[in-house]
Image 1 (cartoon, one colour):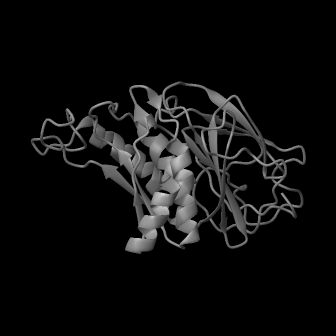
Image 2 (tube, helix red, strand yellow):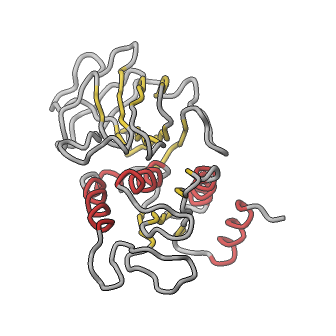
Image 3 (cartoon, helix red, strand yellow):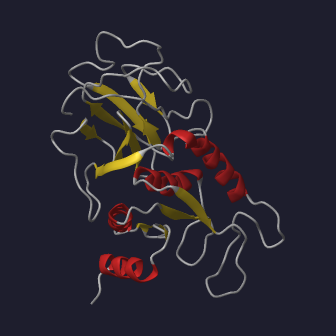
Length: 278
């Protein structure tokens, strides 16, 4: 029997698309699908092998076994895709489908053509992404890891990587580069329960300041929301000592269910430069 990875490879060889458009709706009335991240691993790997960008869909219409959107459920899908290197984000669906085949409920736009509460949620989360859009589009995805418990088909944090440890939270950890600059994105994998985890990061040496957006975050951070990207201190000069201590920085990230969307959403961004081998 053909595996999903073989199916993707055969499709790319036959169709030769300009990009990969991918959908896999993970949140059901039974919880998060066990193969969600395994399939993202396959799509990311195929896109990199073929030097193709990949786009990913997020489910925005409840139907059959699929739950209604919440801001946390949208974040889980959108930011997981970004952590895996997605270059385009799409919604299924914008307008509410017709027919009785899947017991369709209102999507972003209802059957009368009016915006729904899901539309407002999508606008809220889209604004969070748009705030760092230009930065994300510069990134090159390097690696993706997960904290324990490991989802099916994923890899644990390496012992010599920039993230020393993750405690008390299931997380996706995406590593990126933009030229000489390194970035880390955290995505909390639990969209249903409140709670915070702690992440320890190895010492990082910030390079010359380029990005003047966002809050001033140095040393110990509290990063609210379901996604976080490490940021060096807001300064125009390179400090004599690393931004984080040699014993590592302590990062706290809250679950997407706990983030209320108000105030500073808690993401931060680079550049960071890792001194020598991380």
